[in-house]
Image 1 (cartoon, chains in turn purple, red):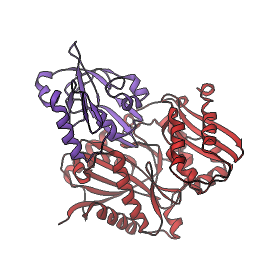
Image 2 (tube, chains in turn cyan, yellow):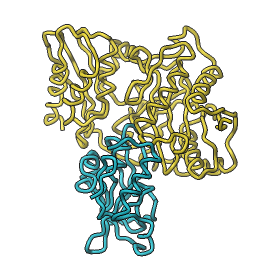
Image 3 (cartoon, rainbow over the protein chains, first blue to last red):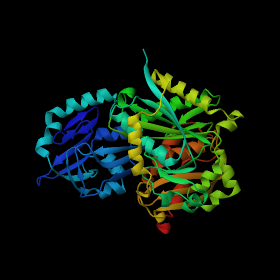
Image 4 (cartoon, each protein chain N blue to C red):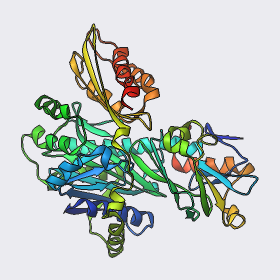
Amino acid sequence: MAIVRGCNLPDELFYHVDSNVWARRETDGTITVGMTSYACALAGQLVAATPKKAGKEIEQNKTLCTVESGKWVGPVKAPVSGELIEINDAVSNKPGLVNEDPYGLGWMAKMKPSRWEAEIGSLVSGADVAAVFEAKMNADGFGGC
Amino acid sequence: MKNTWRVIDTGLRRAADNIALNRALLEARQADEAPSTLRFLRFTPSALLGFHQSAEQELNLDYCRDQGVAIQRRLTGGGAIYFDDTQLGWELYLHRQDLRCADMQAITRRICDAAARGIQALGVDARFRPRNDIEVDGRKISGTGGAFDGDALMYQGTLLIQFDVEKMLRVLRIPAEKLSDKAIASARERVANLADLLGYVPTLDRVQAKLTAAFAEEFGVVFAPGKLSAIEQTRFEAALVEIDTDDWVHMLHRPQSAMAMLEAAHKFPGGLVRVSIAYDSEMQRIKQLWFSGDFFVSPRRTIADLEAQLRDTDAALLKRHVEGFFAARTVDMLGLRPEDFIGVIEAALAQRAVVV
């Protein structure tokens, strides 16, 4: 478990740092993805989330869901390439779940990665998480969660 | 040596063009094909939905059709607005490096404070009112919102110059009683037109010059007049193919029945308080509410501020929001208490089960 400037960033997850999203590799080879607690802190309370449709192939860094907070609209991007196999309807109905529990009930989508082995190198996990996010928060002028 | 940003005026255009230009300029900034840019724009009569809204829920579609009001979907969030040539639009297209800050609320505050200073320079006391408005003495003169993608962002606002509130009310889907003479007069009290405040109609050149100077000072840059590049023009034409379509405008369909209008009134020792609430039953959110009745509150703007504070909020967090609002300021209410506002809102919300 890494805590960076008050933001919880579990170090067993894989992070795409630029996109500020996480991925968890499940035992069946699929991944669960969502926004980091840091991304939630930057956005503020989410009021809307519109995901792409299940079944769609999404390239790494392309939009898998569009979210709104405080009249800002922006994309949540796929941490890796793959097929969108499930979206979290609970989040579509109550986007604030993402702020409340970003790594649990607030997961945003499940994907079947198509190039996991090739793309895993672009993700950060384990002992590197804290330092990488500390640098990102510094660049963003971020005070803390 | 200060950085040079671009200022462009894309003139009076139809909504589809303006929204496609939003997409094109944001993409171009993201791809580093364009400098950071301040754009001024105007609209032929248009009803503009927030990105996540549905036309059926928000607009009086018959009226729009009969009056030739175009319907479009913004890239930015928030509520539906009516935009015509009595308003000026302003937009900033920036790179994350221009801001050195990624906190969305802090970015909103910085840009709105600067825009307010630009309006102040015209001679009116404009201030940022969280979360997204610029107001003059409690009356809204500008609404704003943003969109981002990767390292680029767009932040846009309106500026009311000779705005017709009644037209806006007729374009939006609101209860019929909100169109009574009294209700229209009350709505007029909540917005401020630059021309009314100044006593004359300022030229667009002058308004644009003051806003440009305020943004230049805030960001420590100089603005050079420019125009759309060939790359932006190409991106614009591509964006228009997607945006100038019914598929884009009606991308989200949500039934009218999921947006209830709830009302309640209660006589407290401090006076009669009535509230009307546009309530999203699917998301369990207060989309917007309006207070009226017979009670005394000073400063007068408190009620407009409270309405702004409670726009688009989770109904479950109502008590916390109202208590936080009153805890943060000194208000004289002659016997009315913060919990009275909570009480009347809860009474309106209690009708949910009946309506849904």
